[in-house]
Each structure stands twice: as C-alpha cells, then as structure tokens.
Length: 295
Image 1: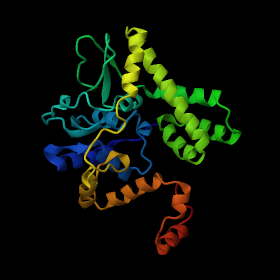
Image 2: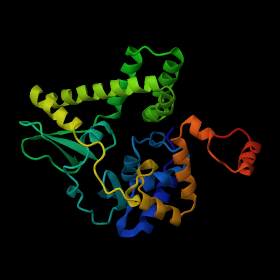
Image 3: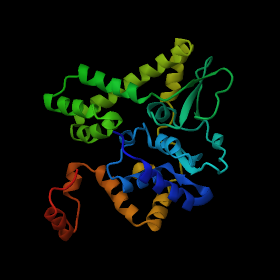
Image 4: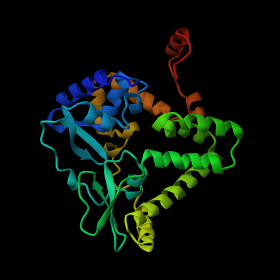
C-alpha cells in the first residue's frame, strides 16, 4: 500500500508559499521530503519521481520555471517563468541518461545536429524528439550486465537483490561498486555502450537514417560533461543538486536542514573516509546507548 503523501506535500506547499514569487527549487523540495520522511522514496508514495508526486499529488503546485536542470515549484496560480530560454547549451548526454530529466533531445533528421529543449517545448521543423532513456531501459541494461558479466557470486547476489527494489536500485548499487572498483569500471563501460546503442535505435525508430543517427550519437557523446561556469565558491554544487547559495539560504531558514545536508554528504563517503571521520565521542555514545544505528 502506498504511503500517504499529505504530510510531505503540506510541508512543501508551506515552503512554496513562504518562498513567494521566486519559488522552491526541486533540490530544496527533495531536502524537505527527507526531513518529513528520512527514508523518502517517491515509489513508496506511488509516483516515479518527486516531480510527479508534487505536480500530480498537489493541485496547488506546478513547475513555474527551471534553474539549469532543476525545476522550480510555485503556486498553480502563479505566472510561469519563460522556461524556453534554456535550450541548446545543456549537456545532451546527461539529458539522455537521466530518466527524470526535464529536457529532451531535439535531433535534426538530415544532419544529426542535437539540441536540448525543456519538456514543454516543441522541436523545430525537421527535428525529432527523443525523450530520455526511461527507468525500464536502465533496469534492462543492469539485468543484461548481471547476465553477461563474470561476477563473484556474492556481488552478483547483492546486486540482483538491489535490482528488485524499484527505481532506487542504482542508488543501492553505487556504494557496492565504489568498493568493488573493478566491477564498477566494467559496469560503467557496459552501461555506456548499451545506452549509446539504445540511442541509435531510438533515432532509427523515429525515421532517422542510421548513418545520421550515428552522427547524432557522436554529437551527443561529444557535448561537454561539465558545462563551463565561473569557478568561484558561489557556483559550487552540493549533494542533491543544491548549489551553495541555495544551501546557505536553506540552512539559515531552517537549521534542521543542516543536519540533512550533512547526512547527504556522509552518504557519499567511502568506508575508509567514514572511519577517519571526526565525531564527538559523547554523541557517538548516546547513539550506541539507544541501540543499533538505523540504516
């Protein structure tokens, strides 16, 4: 049975109202979701993504704009920002491999030129629309990896079990593959090759000639993986996609979000980093006295 999203949506709605015309970023909404439900998973609420949960589960909320790839949520009665200003410079490969991306690929049938457009935009005449590879595609690639690669029985069993836990399986795979770096490298290459093949197939299915589809693939793979931005500290990106200014604002507005931010950082650390992490002894003993730490 799906969880009741009412408490979560009520909290996000309150924050959107408090934010006013500037709206609430998707990354900030994600932080709020984990404050309400530390084990937040949109699938547990019956939705494929946080964006779907917010826009479909609460009629008073909608996407009013974009900050890079991050949706901005506002009141349904608010005037939407012109999201079509963000167009051709975004990382095409990242768009293609991200099932929840708010963008799609616009590919010229004749030349294979590739652009990136917001989901509500329309491709130009002579272009085809290619939506990002969906969750099912990524899971099928993972299943093929487990079936075709020579893996140790323990890691195959672990990855197989995680694969059956819905659309969050890739988050569970990540720490395992960080430890087993040889397997992680093989998975990265296997996934990359399969996603490239699938993109060519998707283009051909849309009527793009195969040579042009392969040229489009080269264009997609060749786009910058990290778009150039000024390197000042104000442009740093923190866990969950929250940039530094937004994180600072969030922490000032609600100190408990600092704890969540720290949790997100810790979740990205390897075992050796965790063992070297400095923690107040008194707090550690308090946690031990309460019983086994929660996972």
